Image 1 (cartoon, helix red, strand yellow):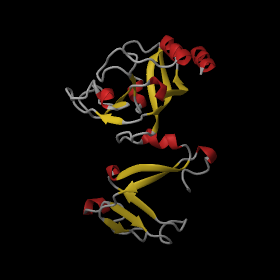
Image 2 (tube, helix red, strand yellow):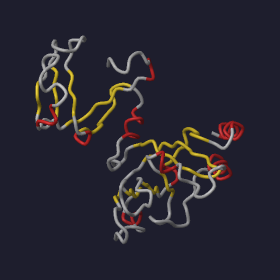
Image 3 (cartoon, one colour):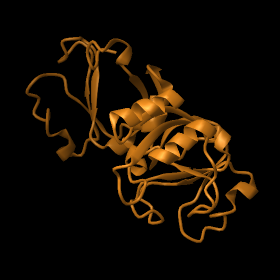
Image 4 (cartoon, one colour):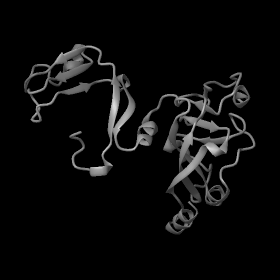
Length: 225
């Protein structure tokens, strides 16, 4: 809880699950492996309490970030954790997601709600992503009219679709799923960014406006939010 300093209500503390691998104990300044432990085959360096840190508390350094998974939040907004988690969305959870569109379409969404697209890579549904970068790719072409909406999405039951020609690529909702999820780094999506398709628009709520073409556009949208 000592980091990142005094940020008051803006501070977020994450609970993690860490596979520490092979551990070395570093107990004093200028330890011969203080900054080269990974070169010697260790995955984690551990500073015991009441040794090197002025706080007197233990500290760990994990070399490979893939050994770390965010599992919960201790202090702050739980949605912020789920936004950071790149794993498959868990069934029946609520996630922060994003949707990029035109200004006129954003006005319509705020007035009447999302509507299913007629078709798409995953069939009918509302296309969204937990990756803000993915949302910012839309609308395709001219971005001067772009609006990016921040959403809260109840994903329901999730189906992973990770290759073209998947037997449920466009029929997942008929098989009892509420959301289809394409993982990041997947060749189905040109950008290699994650994509989600939510069948029922009622599962999606707009909670904020990330960006709009001008300040006036932004003010107009906030009046509808």
